[in-house]
Image (cartoon, helix red, strand yellow):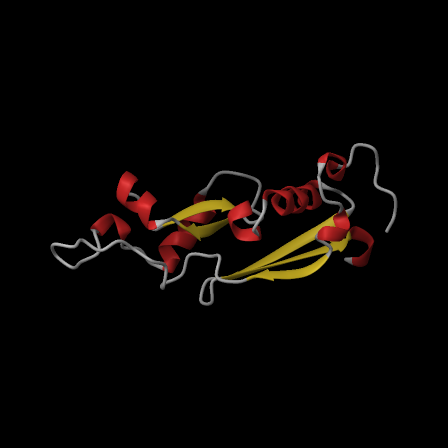
Length: 141
């Protein structure tokens, strides 16, 4: 791996590029049709605010006005109840809730911001799996 320029985003990370180079699949992290929703104990039904489709969640994530691609993550049942929110939320594709740690979140973010790497991801909403691939920029050609 080539030396990173002094202004590369990885210089502020706990993890180096080696921690994210390659392909990694994070299983069951995306909003799916199987995402848990609350049930009203009196009626046995899911409240209207917690009823949603994967397509609705994907459209919501895509509608977020940011340069960083967004994914739809499941919202906790507690959040859905307390805030009367949908069963999903949008976040950057490298969000720590998807990647499992704040350190990995920062490393994927640094790779995404760095000119030394290319970052691609695939969000499979049928399985709930998120696959992120990081390559050195000269490998991507």
